[in-house]
View 1: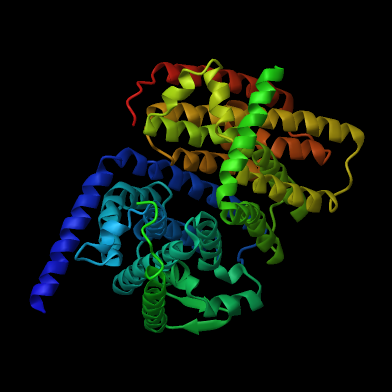
View 2: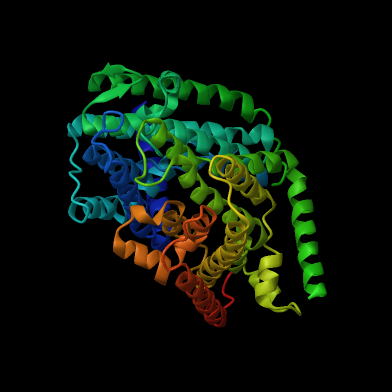
Length: 273
Length: 260
């Protein structure tokens, strides 16, 4: 039991470190975020400044809160970003996945460790510089209302993004090439997760639907936890309550992954290897 | 010229045939491309639906700016912007050399072999939004249409300039597909009325890097209220294209054939 856990930690350390080193070779690619993130953000600042020049609040947000929303959305994305769906479908399509079936570690765990290593690199290459830029250049107060709950919520979002993306990758067992599905999912996720606009901007009936979908737990909930208040579709919840619901969404997603994996892996034939 | 067009058509035909091997995925990707184009207009719609607005612009006028931008991108992406991905991919794999030894212009071959079929969805997305906008604004007269069409052609020239820059970067910045993000972030300024930006940004997007030409300037002409400095922006657009061509050729000379 203890030996198994130690082995898992060893696998985690080794895989995360190898991924970190591998991606560090392409650090200039990641550094593109230092330009792209602030430019996207600057456009949002102009858009919302123009919108707020005619009124002081929009759906309960004032200008500072709206800009803070986009600032947090931007930096959280650096921490939770994931591409395991693309990796998995590529491994299935090319047949390279066969090597993972022979390894004494599950591919899902291996992919999670890879994500950890990748995001550790992003922490100092993307997150910290952009965070400092937003704080000192754009003068936004980027401190969370409660650091503990913000950290818990972002961690849960990290796992939830991974699990949802991994489930999309699993569809490769049926569809072989999942690029279209992947794009469809990413669009729906970004729209329903509150990455593009706060979910409270949607009409009431849409908000009620969005409340029951898991997407809000990816971006909208971590942002609201960071700000310190939660409200959607007229429902106000305390921070521990919404983080609890987020944890529940992670558990549900884990079981969805397990079922999909059980059904999907039986279909793998190794064609293309 | 006829041979060049024939080669171009063959490139399109081959790309379509290749993509049809996974036709289910192709149709879904094309449809998604169409849907994706509605994301920015959706934000605009939500802003206006919540009683807010961009000062001096009604919703359909803003949507017109975005529709023209998307229409321009919808033509650029399938027909010549694919050279960006094509160049990056080939340089990384080492197959860019194959283009160099062809008895045609390298640039032409990079465009021809980079036709991106599923991006046609972008064009339809832009076209639908354009129709929705045009029926909800006062219908433009003949002069507005002619001016718009001329400026729209200039917007394609600017798009081509950007494609050259990104493709040129792809030759020396090995395997970096994130150059697209640089393009999307910078051109975001072209999707909104220039009047919402500060004076310095307005100067940059009209007189230095002609991003306003991608949407705002042609839309303003269409709406019958030509943007200030339109003629100067047209000249800048041609200067921009010349610089981009020069940049691409300089980058090509720096190609080391180290991929693969």
